[in-house]
Image (cartoon, rainbow over all chains, first blue to last red; front, side, top):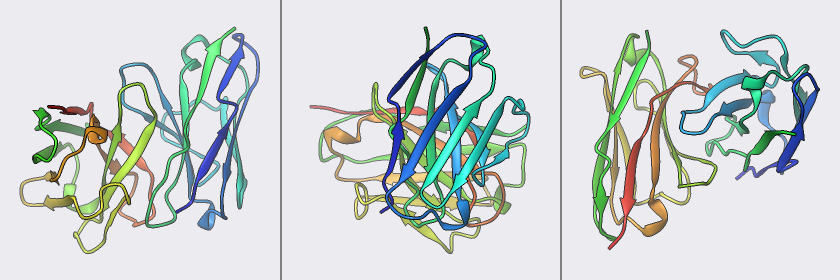
Length: 108
Length: 121
């Protein structure tokens, strides 16, 4: 089973700042089958990025994904108030589709 | 509009069984793979199970293997999760989620609002 470790656990930033979230895999993620989700309190997750760097439909271009192999990054270029939430990475290239433990992005 | 509506969540005793359903609408259900994902109270997301569009490929998380069974009825546009031998640690909101495409390797692009399963005596 591929274990995904996200860092930091909590990120405190202000609106307008740049956010960089990390997701590290215990083994190489096949064909960059790595996705990022956003979840707000009381809501279902929303797909942001898949294939490591492809934005899902309707996702603003301030969200970008990068990386390959075992190291992946989600970058939010300029934080908007609605971006403060919990972010999860997930690999879907193996039979067991694991999630990371999440990064909470909070307002500083 | 894609809609996924889960049902069947309830309070059940340890060792008991429960069947969750997910009613799909707004898309050709038989063309997409589906997943169940759960979230324990105050915790992160945990992938539970995957089923391909034709039911030919099924995967389970180790934590539920041998106890849970995923299935689907394409004629009824419905996804199911039969949960047996339930444990306290199965307490969670259970989400059904649709793949972005019909591929086996696809992330979950659409999610229901979830149904709560509570396992407690």
